[in-house]
Image (tube, rainbow, N blue to C red; front, top):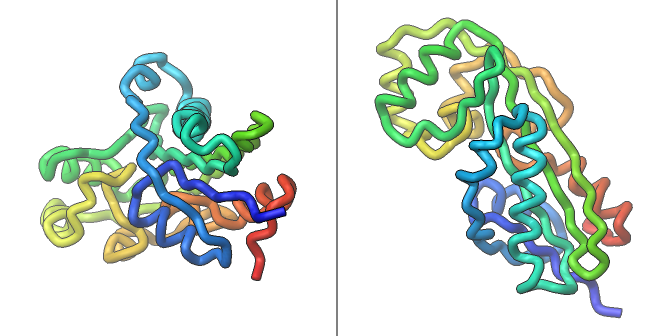
Length: 197
């Protein structure tokens, strides 16, 4: 029996780079999901990222009816407030100024959907990130250099954004980049797909 197709319901370059670490070939596709309606439901951050991860996977199910489909979503949260992608330089600077010198949570939802059976495995990864105290000038320099306007929380920890942090608490740092790879491998193995060399 030929191996199942792995589909990543994301065109994020960071998620694709993480997936490329596996021995298994995969296809990366844009889920085309409109996230706006989900964000108006007033869901707690943990529930929101899991629901969006599942919705992204289900959005491509019809196109890949025999595949194992991977969906993921991420948000930063501080004081109960969800911080998404800042979208502009000004919003990015304000967001980082709010996080500077404080700890916040980065939540990553993971869904692996067996398109043929409908079996769906969902996992939530939570990391606590402790950001250094930062001056406005340091924040502006960082944003100008890294341009993390499309990143949850407004930083790229996998590039020069690492300098913003004193420490990170969690089990799998790949989740901070966008996809918890250790959990993904565990889930794939449970679903009968072996991505290990």
